[in-house]
Length: 365
Ligand code: NDP
Ligand code: GDR
Image 1 (tube, protein in one colour):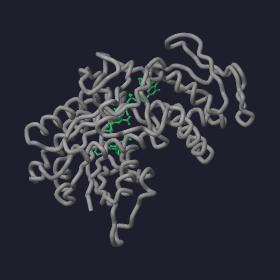
Image 2: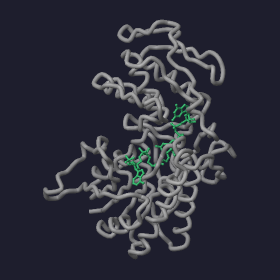
Image 3: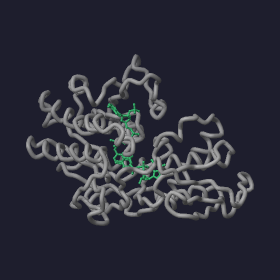
Image 4: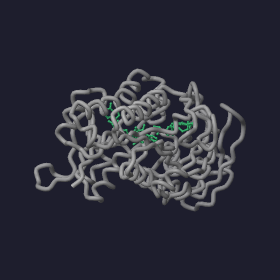
């Protein structure tokens, strides 16, 4: 039985990847950091009682900032494959916590690679590093592909740049099977609530149910290449099944503005929006309501800009060229953006039908 170790197992991608690897017959070990509340909602459906026999899914406490536990967990689990997904993954928050982000996202990757050398597993264990389209940052070339120069625009992206290159360096220096997946934005109903897509789909659900008045956003002009996390974890696995270690862009090749994502999400429930004004003065108002269940008055302001969500340096345009991953990995996404939006809006309607809104949610992200 193949053994996989996933850091960040209770994050969006960790949950989908754990599910995929369990389906494929792997023994899956997940690393989870300690929190004051149990935050395993995304993986609760995969729980296996550690006291029973033939358990194939186990969690270990660990933190990317602590070499000792990384070495110990790798020694105990002797993985064939490590998927390093753990990270402080919010770009805006990285401006507030730059040193911690460098430590967890940058040096954390080094800790894993070095642990493998210390344990003499460098020629046994394959490593997947969760690299990101944020490396491209300030546009140098579109669409962005593996050879496009990097120009990171946030402490998060700079930390991930270190992680990218240390992965390449350990591959070249020690002949390790260490790969970067340069993944463009990928979303799902499991996406963290402070990333823009989920913030939008949650707000749409809450607004139509009368639980929220308005959605405040930052830069509506930013363009992202959005895919579905389920498709993207399949690509991660494929990257480690190749004969040769390499780096791959994973993207859809389609880019959309934040404004259009908002439009699509409201339209999903039969509500059409018109955007008027510019910059920080721009607002989105209801221009038509086709839905008999969720009636919103025409003219109601449902979207406004709050400059608090602007980033000190922004990534304006991301659009990936997935040619290499399609030809070499045989990877093909199953979801397009309309299908993704549909699934996320439907899931959030369910969430809000059952739930009370937390007061803090629009203070962050
Ligand atoms: P999430 O934010 O949903 O998950 C991140 C995971 O990392 C969580 O389990 C989190 O734990 C854990 N984590 C954070 N800090 C530490 C730490 N110091 N030690 C141990 N664990 C930690 O991210 P995604 O699932 O969306 O992304 C997975 C990876 O892929 C990340 O590295 C991200 O930067 C990268 N990426 C994501 C893309 C995307 O569009 N989703 C695109 C490209 C790259 P906790 O729950 O306790 O916070
Ligand atoms: P991103 O994702 O920064 O691309 O990083 P996010 O969803 O946070 O932002 C996308 C774009 O939307 C704009 N935006 C807002 N963003 C947030 N979060 N909140 C808002 O209110 C808002 N209004 C506008 C942002 O300015 C940005 O341009 C994600 C993360 O998953 C990273 O870990 C990953 O590496 C990259 O995707 C690829």
